[in-house]
Image (cartoon, rainbow, N blue to C red):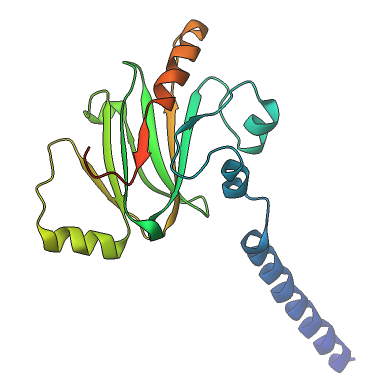
Length: 183
């Protein structure tokens, strides 16, 4: 009887280990993750305003319908990316997220950077090269050291009135997300 109980306990422990392993590995093998959904909407290095009236997209990405969103996806394996733009005088936030959804950098209009965004995103090797070159970095220019190469920049704007939504979408599409270093 003790031997049967031991086999049952061992089976339960092994089943638990297999169950947890599968649950933790499923996101790694998922083909329709947020990155893939956004890739179909935003071409590489183009800032795109998301349609806040697209209920399927809003639900899939868990977006707040009161905000306007703009995204830019990029891969640092091809070089650093520079995000530059002027935002409306309203509350805004920008986040840089890795492909797995971890936010690696975030700031808001309340951080004192005014209404302009000037961010350089570098991977560790590019950051080392930047430090070795000793380049003069302009005032207000933020450097983000990203631990991975595939990233998404997400800008959120809060229009106080619905009449401002279209103007805010235009502002989002004017943000540049390029490899051009002349910003």
